[in-house]
Length: 387
Ligand code: PMP
Ligand code: GLN
Image 1 (cartoon, rainbow, N blue to C red):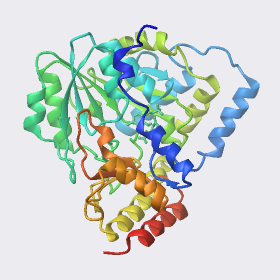
Image 2 (image 1 turned 135 degrees about the horizontal axis):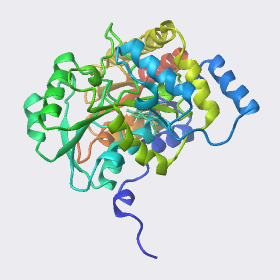
Image 3 (image 1 turned 90 degrees about the vertical axis):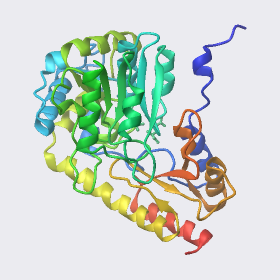
Image 4 (image 1 turned 90 degrees about the horizontal axis):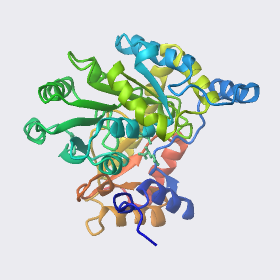
């Protein structure tokens, strides 16, 4: 038989699937793949259930149902003062994953360069390369994840079509500073590029920081696609409802890909997400407050064991340097060891780099019930002891 597509087949099974399967096999507490271990708000799920029973259940409009598009615009206007027009500037996709793919396929021409920041979320690179784009990788380094302005500037060229910015950033937990965003915006404008802004963790942000979309910087309104997801904002990662905003011309490019990728998204989940987005500000604040407590618990627990923690100011994730506890095993071997021998699963950090990186680092996910996080810390303490 003829070979399948060489770009996609060169990528293995995702590390999230691999580590979750291993956690299940060894009955380990799964602090690997990023998903909450509780279901999201019951009132939102009730809207979805009622709507599935009562219908309609046929194809919704290609751009999304009006209720969710209106709620998306309202949400953006309320939180970020973006003045979004729901009819010409919003689109609903099957998860942020599809919004990312539609943005990349809609904008990239073969040979275009795209700037990606490492460590990076797993879907960016395969989709970009499949679209014919050429990745230009810039690293942010632990423990502070500061953006190196010089390296960033060197990665831009006249061929730069777009930047993919994940803020707050998975897996690092980094939240970009105002100065970093401003500098990035100045380069994007200088090189006449676009920004695909993956902001799925916009409401999971700590230490009193408030989220600032790149789109809100002067001159960036026309250049950005701002992507978010019900999976993270309503703690239901299985739902796969993405809602994005972009100026009409850019949105049109995204829609051209979306109409052939999935065309639309289940109507009951769209209606329930609209209901969720219309919740008062307190719901969104509480989400961050709750998660911040869990982050604190895991940071303190791991630190007291001798892990060197890095800065996590957003997302579900904390990255640590484990070299003080083990200097023989590489990050994948160490994660396997933790899963099998200690009963706690994590994700090896090298998985988030194209060509090697993340040495001695692993990622823990803290969006789990408090008693499970405590149990995970106890298991680690019993195994390694206090330094
Ligand atoms: N981007 C990032 C950075 C993520 O962590 C995730 C969560 N898996 C996604 C995109 C995908 O979101 P969705 O489940 O809505 O496709
Ligand atoms: N976003 C999740 C994580 O980073 C995983 C998503 C997936 O499994 N595809 O852990």
